[in-house]
Amino acid sequence: MSTYGPSFITPPADEQELYPYRPVWRSLSIETAILIGLVAIFYGGIGVFHLSIPVRIQSYLAVVLIFTPFSLWLLFSWWAERRIAQPRQHLISVVILTMLVANSIGLPLVDQFFQVDNWLPLAPAVNRIIGYTLTTGITQEIIKYIVIRYTIWPQHLRVRLDGVAYGIAAGIGYATILNIQYVTVNFAIPTDILAFQIFANYALHVSTGIVIGYGLSESLFSNPTPIFLAIVLLVGAVITGITIPIHAGLVNSSLSIDSVSAPKPLFGLGFSTVLLIGVSIIIAGLIRNADRLERESRAESKE
Amino acid sequence: MAVSVIDTNSNQLTFRQRWNHYLVIITALLGLFAAANLRDNALYAVTPYINTTAGISALYPRNWLIDTTGDYIFRVQNASRVGFKTTIQVAVQAISSNTTTRNLVDALTLNRSQLLAAYRPLPADNAFTLPDGTQATSVNYTYAAINADPFLDTTPIVVRGVDILSIKRGQAVIITFLADSNSYEEDYRIFERFLNTLEF
Image (cartoon, rainbow over all chains, first blue to last red):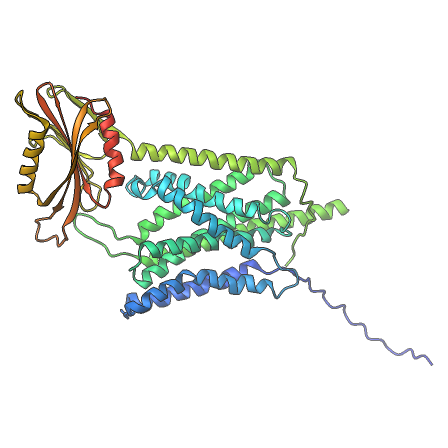
């Protein structure tokens, strides 16, 4: 027997689009927020409330701080990849390779061959920016570029954000090596100052890593003009060249005839945060725009 | 969030992709080459010094402070060095016809042992050859540089020095190089470049 009663018409459920990759910006935001929080805790405890950390503990704390950005990245980026449908491969290889190349080529080239500490800090402002761009900037960015280019490019890039994820990995590797070098050179440095320096290295190298990673993604997906990657490399180098003297100028105490000002580490923290957020927003916008243009062009070609 | 997933053939690079990679390497090499030039201009830049009366000319590092008021022809110091200022000094001393290099070394040793704290002469080299082929004697020594200023609470610095003595045209030329013992090896390269340009 069949019945012809009223049938309920239910609206079709919205098909939620599955995003099978780890969201890069969310992981980066969490890592950065935790790092800023840690720096603020150390600054508040030591710098403001003058809590004294026993000397015995300081060296252990320095080791913990050195590896904090790397540990946070392992927890919120690398480990998060394991819980999703299509994880990014060889992220850890990029970090370790960048660390090895930075330590074996990057640091000796900048410190011993270019001897930047012997001539750039005393140079006029413009010369300092140009000098740091050509020495430290080019060296650091070409290392990140070469590591990503010859390990995961192009077979492991599926979406544009993959380039950013690998760029961040390269940046974390380089920053970790610089942090280790900083502590070995300045062994007795106060913990709060060390925390500020570690965040400055993290922000600079993650920012430039994002730029290099974006460039490599674009060179694969958008097939841009042949000078595109060279421009991206220069942008990364210029960011480094501008950041180092400006950060030093903001943080270090100034000396004049009638006064000596105290160091201003909070200015440096603010500058590094703005740099990282600014670069991330610009690159996220560029990627979103490129993805939209691509979808539109594909839709047009189907029609 | 919408994403674009593009199938790519990993083995086939387009012309633009290939040239993107070539050009980025070329750009980096050009940048590093320019950086090396900048470094050379900053670290190895020199200023000429000519003294026609004494018959001495040399190129000393730019940004070093020159002093011609003492009992020497000239003295240049690296004022940017923290601690002991690396110093190069050229002095001339009139001598008699029977004065030997040994006499000069003994006189210098006696004089310095009275003026400098913890002065200690090191073995001399009688077969030192200057870049222009002139035979000379080099005398190495160390002493402790003590800052007498009571407001600067600093520990003494161990200074390592070398005197190069050469007799020419009836006068003794004494070229002195002084540096903090920790940076001596590094700064000695500057002194070698100075010797290469020194004419007397």
